[in-house]
Image: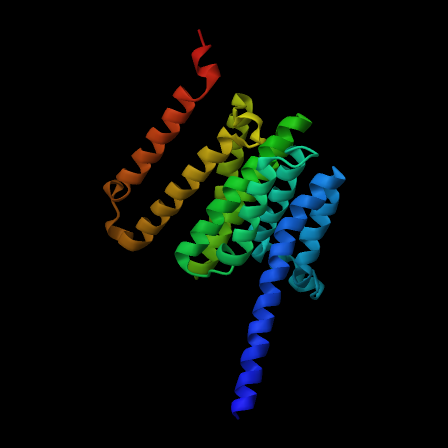
Length: 262
C-alpha cells in the first residue's frame, strides 16, 4: 500500500511538473516563434493547437466549446498579435508578453472563483482590445476594430455570467458586445496609443477605457443582483463616478488632440 501511494504521488508530481513545463514553453514559444518568423501565423497556429481539446469534439458541441474558451483564446491570440507588432527583433515588450502569458497559463487561467472569472475577463478585455486596436490601426480598418471589440465584450460578459446566472443571459452578453463596439468606434476616431520609449510597449487608450467600463459594469450587475427590488443608484454611485472621473482624466489630460480642439 505504501509503495502504491508513493508511486501515485510520484506520478502526480511528474504530471504537474510536465504541465508547468508545457505551459512555460507555450508562453515563451508563442512569442518567440512570432518574433523570429516575423509572421503571426505560426504563433496563432501554436495557440490554437494548444486548445486541441476544444475542437476534438462532435460538431454539435463545437460552438459551445469555442464560446466557453473564448477568453483564453483572446488572451493567447492577443499575445501573438502584440508580439508581431512589437517588432521582428527581441525587445522589452516581448519579454513582458512572455511573462504575462506564462502567468496567465499557470496562475490566472486555472482559477475558478467568481472574482477570478472577473479578473480573467478584465485581462482578456485589456489584452484583446490592445491587440485589436493596434492591428486595426495598422490595417486602417475601423470595421475590424468594431467587430473585434464586440466579440471581446461578448466573450468577457459571457465568461462572468455563465458562472453566476441560471437564467438565459444571451441578450445581456450581446448588449455588452454592442456597447464595446460603440466605444471602440468612438475611440478609433480618437486614436490615442501610449508608447514607452524604445521598449516597444504600446497601450491603446481604448484598452484602458474598456477595462474600466468592464469593471464598473460588473460591479453594477452584482449590486443589482444583491439588492434586487431595493436597488438604488446610490448602491453603485461610488464606482460609477470613479470610473467616469478616471476616464475623464484620461481623455482630457492624456490625449493630445484634446488640446487642439480650438
